Length: 225
Length: 112
View: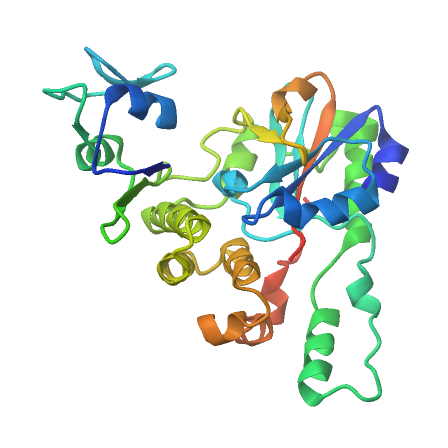
């Protein structure tokens, strides 16, 4: 997905993609093999990136030549996502119709994001999109004790799931979601582990949660400047 | 950071968390936190969590304990990217810091 933009901007920019996959490399492998990336393509089984404040995907972080973050995590689409142009099948159920309409309504401002990225690559620190270190810290997410506790519960859930303790694992995944309710990564990765019947285990669905929390909040509007 | 007991040896604590038990306390890189333990073989994780200000979650039904990450302030305490090392799809480790000298875009994605 990022390959074309990488080809355009390399070698001035390197892209590093990281798959947040509690199920491990096997879950991401089909996508990676299909994309055949020439950039580093990594696997984050333990949600290490949560420490940067990443709570949803896709999220991008800009890092300058000195290893300094110049934009903290924010929604990052390299092009208009296909979900924006889905068509609703004539025989769609009301629920499926609602899901597609909701997906199409998500914020996904790829054009502005990519334009800002190109500007930074062209002019570096002079770009108005390259933030000062103080501003990067200010814009990064708060890190309350509840969210750190959620990370411990999520880690326990992963370990328990790996050892076959599915019911216990689910308890900890649910607790992680309760303590860190704005983390879509905790929610959706736990649902992926649960499989297609996740709604019967977690008592909710992606659509229900997005509608309850506001479609505009799933991908917050970009604050580029 | 998962442990199979509520107590841990100093060696295992250092291996899992990076925090080393030294005469001046628990130390990781340049930071030291006051801490004393009568034993280097059985350090209470609850004491470690209290000293470091990180959460401890216990799951007695499975005999597991988990220390959470640092809390308080902002996710990014500074704008300097933490040292991230993650494997690629074949398990080969990659350090993001190896890209120093070039601009980088780190993108998190998922298959789900």
